[in-house]
Length: 229
Image 1 (cartoon, rainbow, N blue to C red):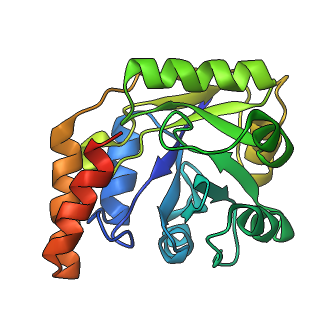
Image 2: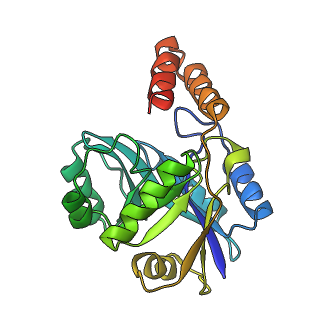
Protein backbone atom coordinates (compact mmCIF):
# COMPACT_ATOMS: atom_id res chain seq x y z
CA UNK A 1 0.00 0.00 0.00
CA UNK A 2 1.30 3.47 -0.96
CA UNK A 3 0.11 6.94 0.05
CA UNK A 4 0.43 10.30 -1.72
CA UNK A 5 -0.31 13.99 -1.20
CA UNK A 6 -1.22 15.49 -4.57
CA UNK A 7 -1.05 19.21 -3.78
CA UNK A 8 1.99 20.69 -2.03
CA UNK A 9 3.58 24.10 -2.59
CA UNK A 10 7.30 24.84 -2.40
CA UNK A 11 9.53 27.91 -2.20
CA UNK A 12 8.83 28.42 -5.89
CA UNK A 13 5.26 29.50 -5.06
CA UNK A 14 5.00 33.19 -4.20
CA UNK A 15 3.17 32.33 -0.97
CA UNK A 16 5.26 29.45 0.38
CA UNK A 17 8.78 28.98 1.73
CA UNK A 18 8.83 25.17 1.86
CA UNK A 19 12.20 23.59 1.01
CA UNK A 20 12.31 20.17 -0.62
CA UNK A 21 14.34 18.45 2.09
CA UNK A 22 11.82 19.64 4.69
CA UNK A 23 8.88 18.63 2.51
CA UNK A 24 10.30 15.14 2.11
CA UNK A 25 11.15 14.80 5.81
CA UNK A 26 7.65 15.83 6.87
CA UNK A 27 6.02 13.55 4.30
CA UNK A 28 8.02 10.55 5.46
CA UNK A 29 7.16 11.39 9.07
CA UNK A 30 3.49 11.29 8.04
CA UNK A 31 4.05 7.92 6.28
CA UNK A 32 3.60 9.41 2.82
CA UNK A 33 5.47 7.85 -0.10
CA UNK A 34 5.30 10.78 -2.51
CA UNK A 35 4.00 14.29 -3.10
CA UNK A 36 3.10 16.40 -6.11
CA UNK A 37 4.76 19.81 -6.17
CA UNK A 38 2.06 22.08 -7.57
CA UNK A 39 3.45 25.61 -7.43
CA UNK A 40 1.47 28.58 -8.71
CA UNK A 41 2.09 29.22 -12.41
CA UNK A 42 5.42 27.36 -12.60
CA UNK A 43 6.91 23.86 -12.79
CA UNK A 44 10.35 25.02 -11.64
CA UNK A 45 9.79 23.59 -8.17
CA UNK A 46 8.46 20.32 -9.53
CA UNK A 47 11.48 19.89 -11.77
CA UNK A 48 13.94 20.70 -8.99
CA UNK A 49 12.19 18.34 -6.58
CA UNK A 50 13.12 15.37 -8.80
CA UNK A 51 16.67 15.60 -7.43
CA UNK A 52 15.31 14.31 -4.12
CA UNK A 53 13.65 11.18 -5.50
CA UNK A 54 14.89 7.78 -4.36
CA UNK A 55 13.64 4.20 -4.09
CA UNK A 56 11.47 5.15 -1.12
CA UNK A 57 10.04 8.49 -2.20
CA UNK A 58 8.55 10.01 -5.36
CA UNK A 59 8.24 13.70 -6.17
CA UNK A 60 5.78 14.46 -8.99
CA UNK A 61 6.07 17.57 -11.15
CA UNK A 62 2.92 19.67 -11.22
CA UNK A 63 1.68 23.21 -11.66
CA UNK A 64 -1.38 25.05 -10.35
CA UNK A 65 -2.75 27.41 -12.97
CA UNK A 66 -5.27 30.23 -12.44
CA UNK A 67 -7.70 30.29 -15.36
CA UNK A 68 -10.74 32.28 -16.36
CA UNK A 69 -12.96 29.40 -15.17
CA UNK A 70 -11.14 28.48 -11.97
CA UNK A 71 -7.92 26.80 -10.91
CA UNK A 72 -6.55 23.74 -12.70
CA UNK A 73 -3.57 21.56 -11.81
CA UNK A 74 -1.43 19.75 -14.34
CA UNK A 75 0.35 16.66 -12.99
CA UNK A 76 3.32 14.82 -14.49
CA UNK A 77 4.36 17.80 -16.59
CA UNK A 78 7.60 18.39 -18.47
CA UNK A 79 6.93 21.95 -19.71
CA UNK A 80 5.47 25.06 -18.13
CA UNK A 81 1.81 25.81 -18.88
CA UNK A 82 1.62 29.44 -19.97
CA UNK A 83 -2.00 30.17 -20.87
CA UNK A 84 -4.68 31.39 -18.46
CA UNK A 85 -7.58 30.35 -20.70
CA UNK A 86 -9.09 27.17 -19.30
CA UNK A 87 -9.43 25.28 -22.58
CA UNK A 88 -5.97 26.33 -23.77
CA UNK A 89 -4.55 25.18 -20.42
CA UNK A 90 -6.19 21.78 -20.87
CA UNK A 91 -4.71 21.54 -24.37
CA UNK A 92 -1.22 22.42 -23.07
CA UNK A 93 -1.42 19.79 -20.34
CA UNK A 94 -2.72 17.10 -22.70
CA UNK A 95 -0.11 17.94 -25.34
CA UNK A 96 2.63 16.84 -22.93
CA UNK A 97 0.74 13.75 -21.74
CA UNK A 98 -0.02 15.36 -18.40
CA UNK A 99 -2.96 14.70 -16.09
CA UNK A 100 -5.67 17.34 -15.68
CA UNK A 101 -6.51 17.60 -11.99
CA UNK A 102 -9.36 19.78 -10.68
CA UNK A 103 -8.44 21.20 -7.26
CA UNK A 104 -11.03 22.32 -4.69
CA UNK A 105 -13.91 22.44 -7.23
CA UNK A 106 -16.28 23.71 -4.54
CA UNK A 107 -14.46 27.06 -4.53
CA UNK A 108 -14.85 29.68 -7.26
CA UNK A 109 -15.18 27.12 -10.02
CA UNK A 110 -17.18 28.27 -13.06
CA UNK A 111 -17.16 25.05 -15.08
CA UNK A 112 -20.32 23.17 -15.99
CA UNK A 113 -20.51 19.48 -15.20
CA UNK A 114 -20.26 18.64 -18.90
CA UNK A 115 -17.09 20.73 -19.19
CA UNK A 116 -15.59 18.94 -16.20
CA UNK A 117 -16.51 15.52 -17.56
CA UNK A 118 -15.03 16.34 -20.97
CA UNK A 119 -11.76 17.94 -19.82
CA UNK A 120 -10.79 16.70 -16.37
CA UNK A 121 -9.02 13.41 -15.64
CA UNK A 122 -9.00 13.59 -11.85
CA UNK A 123 -11.05 15.44 -9.22
CA UNK A 124 -9.67 16.57 -5.87
CA UNK A 125 -12.34 15.07 -3.62
CA UNK A 126 -10.70 16.27 -0.40
CA UNK A 127 -8.60 19.41 -0.01
CA UNK A 128 -6.74 20.05 3.24
CA UNK A 129 -7.68 23.74 3.28
CA UNK A 130 -11.37 23.23 2.48
CA UNK A 131 -14.26 22.88 4.91
CA UNK A 132 -16.02 19.53 5.41
CA UNK A 133 -19.04 20.83 3.47
CA UNK A 134 -16.82 21.95 0.59
CA UNK A 135 -15.12 18.56 0.51
CA UNK A 136 -18.45 16.74 0.61
CA UNK A 137 -19.49 18.75 -2.45
CA UNK A 138 -16.25 17.87 -4.26
CA UNK A 139 -16.51 14.18 -3.38
CA UNK A 140 -20.12 14.01 -4.58
CA UNK A 141 -19.11 15.77 -7.80
CA UNK A 142 -16.44 13.15 -8.54
CA UNK A 143 -18.82 10.30 -7.76
CA UNK A 144 -21.70 11.78 -9.77
CA UNK A 145 -19.46 12.26 -12.81
CA UNK A 146 -17.81 8.86 -12.29
CA UNK A 147 -14.37 10.45 -12.44
CA UNK A 148 -11.30 9.16 -10.57
CA UNK A 149 -10.56 11.13 -7.41
CA UNK A 150 -7.64 11.94 -5.14
CA UNK A 151 -6.71 14.36 -2.35
CA UNK A 152 -4.20 17.09 -1.62
CA UNK A 153 -3.27 18.94 1.55
CA UNK A 154 -2.82 22.20 -0.42
CA UNK A 155 0.12 22.69 1.95
CA UNK A 156 1.80 26.08 1.87
CA UNK A 157 3.53 25.37 5.19
CA UNK A 158 5.44 22.29 6.32
CA UNK A 159 3.01 21.46 9.12
CA UNK A 160 0.14 21.06 6.61
CA UNK A 161 1.81 18.33 4.53
CA UNK A 162 -0.06 15.06 4.80
CA UNK A 163 -3.12 16.60 6.42
CA UNK A 164 -4.99 14.52 3.87
CA UNK A 165 -3.57 11.73 1.75
CA UNK A 166 -4.64 9.21 -0.86
CA UNK A 167 -3.90 5.53 -0.24
CA UNK A 168 -3.67 2.97 -3.04
CA UNK A 169 -3.99 -0.74 -2.37
CA UNK A 170 -1.30 -1.64 -4.92
CA UNK A 171 2.42 -1.18 -4.60
CA UNK A 172 3.61 1.78 -6.69
CA UNK A 173 7.28 2.14 -7.53
CA UNK A 174 7.29 4.50 -10.50
CA UNK A 175 5.50 7.48 -11.97
CA UNK A 176 3.95 5.33 -14.69
CA UNK A 177 2.55 2.92 -12.11
CA UNK A 178 1.14 5.90 -10.24
CA UNK A 179 -0.42 7.26 -13.43
CA UNK A 180 -2.11 3.91 -14.05
CA UNK A 181 -3.54 3.80 -10.53
CA UNK A 182 -4.67 7.43 -10.60
CA UNK A 183 -6.53 7.30 -13.89
CA UNK A 184 -8.14 3.88 -13.52
CA UNK A 185 -11.25 4.38 -11.41
CA UNK A 186 -11.44 0.62 -10.84
CA UNK A 187 -8.17 0.76 -8.87
CA UNK A 188 -8.97 0.82 -5.17
CA UNK A 189 -8.06 3.98 -3.25
CA UNK A 190 -9.14 5.67 -0.06
CA UNK A 191 -8.63 9.09 1.44
CA UNK A 192 -7.42 9.70 4.98
CA UNK A 193 -8.07 13.10 6.55
CA UNK A 194 -11.10 15.34 6.27
CA UNK A 195 -9.60 18.77 5.68
CA UNK A 196 -10.55 21.94 7.52
CA UNK A 197 -10.57 25.68 6.94
CA UNK A 198 -8.02 27.40 9.16
CA UNK A 199 -7.71 31.20 8.70
CA UNK A 200 -4.26 31.11 10.33
CA UNK A 201 -2.88 29.02 7.47
CA UNK A 202 -4.27 31.43 4.89
CA UNK A 203 -3.02 34.45 6.83
CA UNK A 204 0.47 32.93 7.01
CA UNK A 205 0.69 32.14 3.30
CA UNK A 206 -0.60 35.63 2.44
CA UNK A 207 2.02 37.15 4.75
CA UNK A 208 4.73 35.05 3.11
CA UNK A 209 3.55 36.31 -0.26
CA UNK A 210 3.88 39.90 0.92
CA UNK A 211 7.37 39.30 2.32
CA UNK A 212 8.58 37.57 -0.84
CA UNK A 213 7.09 40.06 -3.30
CA UNK A 214 7.60 43.19 -1.20
CA UNK A 215 4.14 44.30 -2.26
CA UNK A 216 1.66 45.05 0.52
CA UNK A 217 -1.13 44.90 -2.06
CA UNK A 218 -0.38 41.19 -2.42
CA UNK A 219 -1.26 40.72 1.25
CA UNK A 220 -4.66 42.37 0.86
CA UNK A 221 -5.23 40.52 -2.39
CA UNK A 222 -4.24 37.22 -0.83
CA UNK A 223 -6.43 37.71 2.23
CA UNK A 224 -9.40 38.65 0.04
CA UNK A 225 -8.87 35.66 -2.24
CA UNK A 226 -8.42 33.19 0.61
CA UNK A 227 -11.02 34.46 3.05
CA UNK A 228 -13.85 35.41 0.69
CA UNK A 229 -14.90 31.99 -0.52
